[in-house]
Amino acid sequence: MGLNLTLAKLPDSELHSNSSQGWGWNSTARSEFDSIVLPALYLIIFVASLLLNGLAVWIFFHIHNKTSFILYLKNIVVADLLMTLTFPFRIVHDAGLGSWVLKPILCRYTSVLFYANMYTSIVFLGLISIDRYLKVVKPFGDSRMYSVAFTKGLSICVWVTMALLALPNVILTNVQPTQDNMHECMRLKSPLGRQWHTAVVYINSCLFVTVLVILIGCYIAISRYIHKSSRQFISQSSRKRKHNQSIRVVVAVFFTCFLPYHLCRIPFTFAHLDRLLDESAHKLLYYGKEMTLFLSACNVCLDPIIYFFMCKSFSRRLFKKSNIRTRSESIRSLQSVRRSEVRIYYDYTDV
Image (spheres, rainbow, N blue to C red):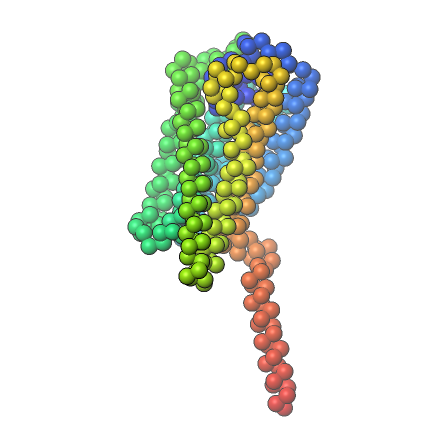
């Protein structure tokens, strides 16, 4: 983050100091992009995320942990809120409103927190897809897999694992900041910190690819199962089609937010590809990486769509609190009114 294309802007995957490459495109347009466009975009999603996730927290507070699915959604809400709290630091720094002391804070804490919670959300999206697969394809499997206690234990394991991966990046960013090294996060890390940073980059990449495969596999398996059973059990297939539609929402959010960024960061992850690019390609790649990273951050605003379309308890509570009837409730109310009118008609004709 900032006006130089350094590892502070690319804390999750870039392993070399790009400022030493001698790239000659540090133009006014780029400065405006870094100091005006990006802070404005992150300010928009910061406000939107506070509103949407604040509403989600309020609704989930009134919903009991009765299923594993609801527990996974609540964990995503927590990860999204923690990720949202990092946006103001980036906004202030990129807009040039903060002092130089803010830079080490970004490198040591907020950037680490941003990526840790981003990948925590990715893992829970994968667990949600597995949960939907088990509920549709194997509804009578091992009951322990569906229990709330098992889900709580698994969720704790996810948080502990992600914390163990992130904490060394905080501890090992321990070099005293100076005017020479404060512009690059990697220079604030110890040699062991740089090695750990490299290891975490590849671990997170493996997590993303694993969840991507799980999402695609679960979606295909659910679609095939529903297609085969639709002809035999029409009444059950309509309910299972809703599960298929709900996992489509997860796949759509996942592909929209996270896939572009991980495709764009490949040249940064594999440094030999990065060095083969010319100056204009570097410029395009930089803008592409920043915009795809922004798409990843937009996940905090798109996750509430998952809550609304996939969780009946969430949508019902939302409609109830806002005094808006769902479609099914409106139909039932209309049917009740019609029955009452018919009853009154017959009572009148009998007089």
